[in-house]
Amino acid sequence: MIGLDENTVDAVFQHMENIMCKSSKPFIKKGGSHMFFETKDLYTQKLCLDDAARFHQVCTQQYILKWMDDWDMELEQVHGLISHFIKGYEIKDPEIHPYIMGIWHKADNEFIGICGFGPKDELGGKAEIAYFIDENYSHRGYMTQIVSKAIEFFFANFDKMYLCALVDDNNFISKKVLLKNSFHYHQITDPTGAIKSHYRVWRT
Image 1 (spheres, one colour):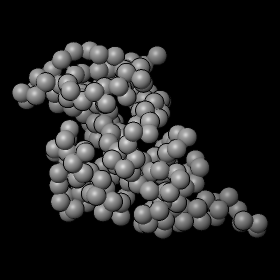
Image 2 (cartoon, one colour; image 1 turned 90 degrees about the vertical axis):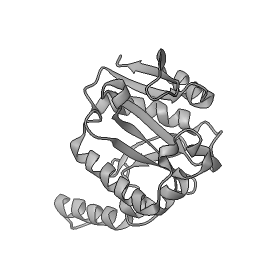
Image 3 (cartoon, helix red, strand yellow; image 1 turned 135 degrees about the horizontal axis):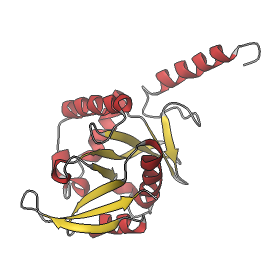
C-alpha cells in the first residue's frame, strides 16, 4: 500500500471485507472488524445474510434438533434470524438481545456452527451461552475450544458477573464441555416440563 495514507488503507480493507462477507469463504483479517476470536482450529466472526444457506444446512441436522428442536426452520426463517442476530452486534448487551457469532473451520474455511449469548426467560433474562456445531466436525474437541474462548470474550466485553448455561439433563456431551470450561452446576430447573441442568461460570 505504498503511497496511500492510513485512512485510504483502512477504507480499502473495509471494502474488501464488505465484498468477501458475501462469500461462503469469508475474508479473514486478523484484528479486523469481522473477527471476534480464534482457537487452534477455529475462528469466529460476524454472521451475514449470505451465510444463511450453510447455516440452514447445519442447524436442521437431526444431530442438533435432538436437543434443540426450535432450530427446525425453513431457509426464509433463517434469513430473518440472521438479520435479528446482526442487530445484536450494535446493541452489545446479551441480556437484552442475542449476540451470536459464526464458527468457521480454519483448515477448509467452512462455516460449521455458532456460539454466542442471549437472554433466557427461564433464567430471569440472564445471559445464557448457546452453541452448536456441524455433526461432521463433532467429537474433535472443537466445542471445548470455542466455549473456553467464548467465556473469555464474554467477560472481556460485557459487564456481567456470571454466564449461565441451560442444558437437557441427559445431554451428557454438552455437560462435559461446560464442566471442562469452569462452569459449575447450579440447580435443576423444570421450566416447561423438561428437566434441565442450570450451570454458571463466574467472573474471576
